[in-house]
Image (cartoon, rainbow, N blue to C red; front, top):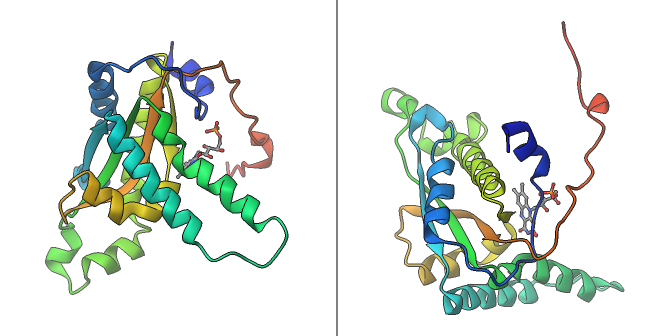
Length: 205
Ligand SMILES: Cc1cc2nc3c(=O)[nH]c(=O)nc-3n(C[C@H](O)[C@H](O)[C@H](O)COP(=O)(O)O)c2cc1C
């Protein structure tokens, strides 16, 4: 698959076959994720590969509990919305593998020479730490497609990020920011329709 095909074939996969994903493939996905650009090349990330079923169930239960505790609007359908969100937050339990992506602290150049705090610089620059993690995760999704795997980027489980972090033994320096569910797709899914690019471009030539 060339790069264009890989990009065009990527789509979020949430339903996986029972086939296991090899640890070699999972390590390769992480390796390619870590080749992404990052702010000042700090590579402020760490990855936890989880295939242990009891652990995934435990994590999923923690997420489910948090979603179900959210206060509902008193309108028709509110329960239904919560159930849907719960599903989109917890389906990783049935994935053969999950990669948790964490951000580490780093000291940026500017904070060494100005009175600005790390948080102020981060905000001023539109969160380059999170932007770096996004590039890394996209690399991982494309790497998965290239290995004939399917994957889904997941931020919804972060509602229980503290609970998950403690279950997977993260230290205080590893801030969990997203997870990627990975497996062989159960069914072939056509990539989802995207907006017409003509409506999205402004050209200043
Ligand atoms: C930052 C981010 C967070 C996401 N979080 C979730 C999630 O928690 N659960 C989920 O099912 N999908 C999640 N997705 C996947 C999106 O729903 C999906 O990318 C979108 O619907 C477009 O579909 P496609 O990926 O097949 O093109 C997330 C995607 C991104 C980029």
